[in-house]
Length: 138
Image (cartoon, rainbow, N blue to C red):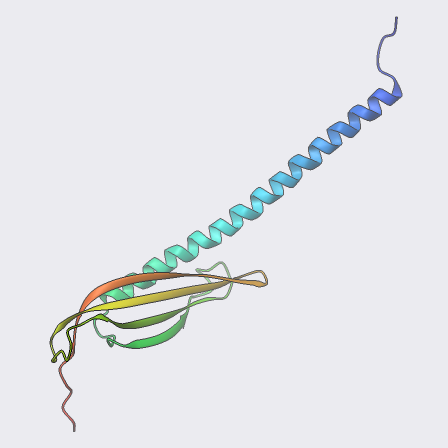
């Protein structure tokens, strides 16, 4: 009657445990990478919503415009990030005179660098605007 394990049984058990630990460490590494990627995406979504809110309340912007901007690296985790805004009249009556209400479409494209890849997404909003009165020539 034998008591204990043979050397072969101990080696096989150690190998099985090693493979299990390697599998768990690989899964943990993947989870940490995904968490970091989602954190970056959530941060940029928050910045995009904030920038879109600023654009929506700024009545000094023209009806038809395109412009770019950069986010402060302190709020983006040190990575370069920016945005492109495209504004245009979405719906308006034909030959609308000045001071006519129209529907304006705003598309905000947000981009950021994640390692060597550039990521991005679009945020779209609509707002009521008014065709401006003609400026007098001086």
